Image 1: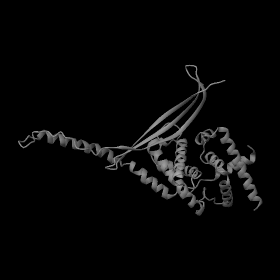
Image 2 (image 1 turned 60 degrees about the vertical axis):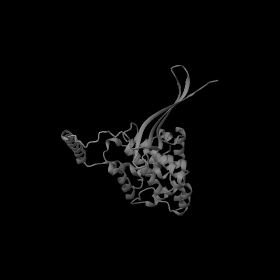
Image 3 (image 1 turned 135 degrees about the vertical axis):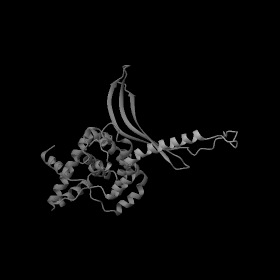
Length: 167
Length: 149
């Protein structure tokens, strides 16, 4: 991820990395609105107080987003459960100009993955984290992060193959 | 990883995460834009401060003590409104490194974990509702003695 301290404009930086952060946040929240809230909280804190710190800004921001998501879940657990049953899930990805059925199938399969596999897959593919960074973020052994990633990919492939077979 | 999984991985990388809504951008702008002040403010503020200082000095040079001036200097202090109280403390862990088993200078073998935090303390003045926030980086090193049998 680009060096945040060299950017004068938060808009420029957020334009590049905001969608990835939001997608990561959605793995730990129950709705798009909640994901936006935690990204806002984490990004404002980062931009005001932490962007000059040494180290990888991505790791700091993702940690911050995850912590904000956990705090929000604790605060609003019961209310959100009720809302979750009523809401249609918002898409994770931009629609494709061609072959959007495939995007929908992938997204649907992704949602059916166990949460711990989906978060590793998301951090690796769209968060562009290394396995070492993922292991630190989630406080799990590096081998566990790598194996969850492989399980997630295998499960996705199975789901997508089954979906193709059933038309 | 087999070729089929690598193809799937490549296909997933082609998917673009949904763009951030204009609403979230506006909310961020409301929080972050006031921090950016127009350039003229940085020039005008020191000039205004210097002018104010000059005026004050000028006035004090020309002040003549009058007979009506109070002979006793008031020394009682009024209760100040500038009382800030800590209202929240937050710690964000942003890096953690498990260094495994290491040997210290005294020969003791220990398990050492190094963690980097940012601590943010917020104070608030209950009378004016003004707040002050202070963030500092902190490194914490945990050492656990290890005994082998």
